[in-house]
Image (cartoon, rainbow, N blue to C red; front, side, top):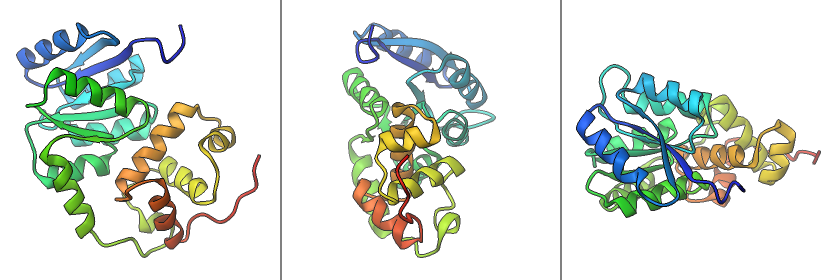
Length: 226
């Protein structure tokens, strides 16, 4: 079975057992979705991300102990091939931006339908980014109001992990995803996820915008192809 044909592997993280179990059951009944694990807090979500290697962790933000933002940051740093899709009641721009800066690839409110959630999971798993309903407008407004980075290197992008900064530097230097993967010994899927994480975290609208911001910050010296 090819990677495109296999079911989407999903971990559901939410501290409310009735909601979590119900959501896992509903999503698991959908064609092309395999719920491989459930987590009741952020620590368990991070553990399952490493143990089960899911395509997507569907992450609640408000959980005891390690919350969803901290768990998202840990997964983005330790398991960059795993996409985090936040599912939460929190619709404020602060929550959205915090999740994005932590490495989330998308944000869907709990009022979304199962089909909307499924589409969002497939989108982030393939390297895209998704923002549901009014959240999208709030993120756009917050990004537009944010000052553009003017510092160099890591100081310009303090929210990026070392890997994300390394990949952004190569993107700004003109390398394709395939070339970056070859240089850093990463899979194509992992490179797509890291690039998308970096683009979202620095507030870029797309890859081209990210290149412009990165070069303004001093990244992207021309690099030789492998």
